[in-house]
Length: 87
Image (cartoon, rainbow, N blue to C red):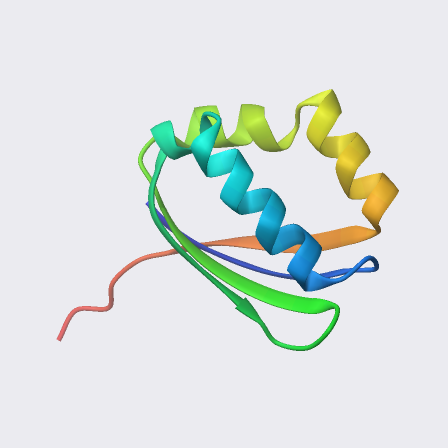
């Protein structure tokens, strides 16, 4: 499933971008097969991802470590599911 994420990070979008790169190397790359990250401004970001296992993604994003990282870095976001429009 393709997902779109939009949010802000108090410590800076670049900090989150580097974290995602590390996450992809350490396990998240098993269920995210393609992704793009855009730093919209210093603290605002957008990301698109092709997620092959939404259950694993949900478990990863709601783990105590991830929730603490979000809290410590002031990361707030909304995740949207996306489908291709026919035509």
